[in-house]
Image 1 (cartoon, rainbow, N blue to C red):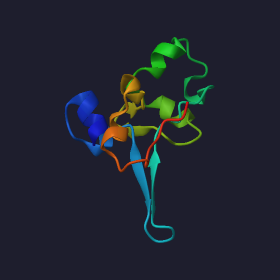
Image 2 (cartoon, one colour):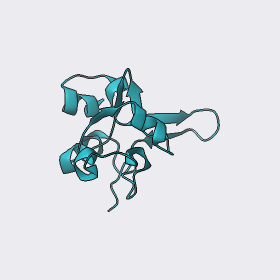
Image 3 (cartoon, rainbow, N blue to C red):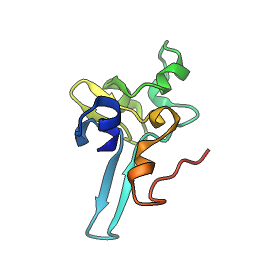
Image 4 (cartoon, rainbow, N blue to C red):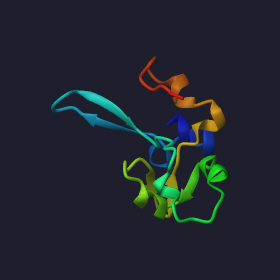
Amino acid sequence: MVCSLYHLGLINIERSAIRIQKDDLETSLNTPVLCRQCKEMKCLQGEEEMKDSEKKKFIWGRIRAEYCPFNALSVLGGNAYHCDLCGGKPQCIKVCTPNAITVIK
C-alpha cells in the first residue's frame, strides 16, 4: 500500500508495483512479487524508447506486463505498475517487516 501512496497519493493495492503472494495451505510463506530489475529487461525489448529512462517510470503500458517472464508487473485497466525503486529509496523496505524485502546490487 505504501507503493501507491508514495507514487499516486492514494492507498490502492491494485495500483501498487508490489504484490504479496500468499501460500497459506502449504508453506505459510508470503512472497513479494515485483519487478526484478533484470539487466536485459524482456518487457522492454523491441521498443524504441530509451530503456534507462523507462526503467525509472512507475506507470507503463499494459502490453509490457505480457512480456515479463516472471509475471511481476501489476496490471489494472490499461496500465502496468512497475517498481522504479522509488527513485532509489524504496518505501516498501522502510515499512515492511525487517529483512522481508531487500535490494541486492
